[in-house]
Amino acid sequence: MSLTPLHDANDRALVHTLGYAGLIPFVLLALLLWLVEPQLQAWVSIALAGYAALIVSFLGGIHWGLAWQAGHDGANTARHALRRHFIWGVMPSLLAWPGLLMPAYAGLAWLGFMLVLCYLVDRRLYRHAGLADWLTLRFHLSAVAALSCFVGAAAI
Image (cartoon, rainbow, N blue to C red):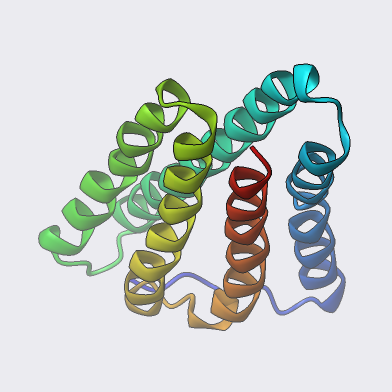
């Protein structure tokens, strides 16, 4: 399965800008957990965990998009490759959900782990999908997002 890469420099710049902008809530909320009064930490930790779970779910949803695109483009993609994307695509949401139900420190640590796991899976599946060029960006985004969750968990 191979998708056409973004060759336009403006499109690539837009994707990078949007990706890094998506880190703003992670960094700000993790920082706030260290700065707010203890009675406000619960609210901030819920906001950080909610955002992290949303992003983890988004990362899974990308795989559904990859599988649909490959299946509809008439690409000569093996059924097992499509199935891998569809099956993995639901796993992040299912695995992130418990992170919202756990105590804040454990939930944030779990969601940080999930962000790392999503990157590790994507490192393998993106290559097969012809998206290896995006792995550097994915690494940067995943590292900062996961670190923010771990730093936030340490503040509680």
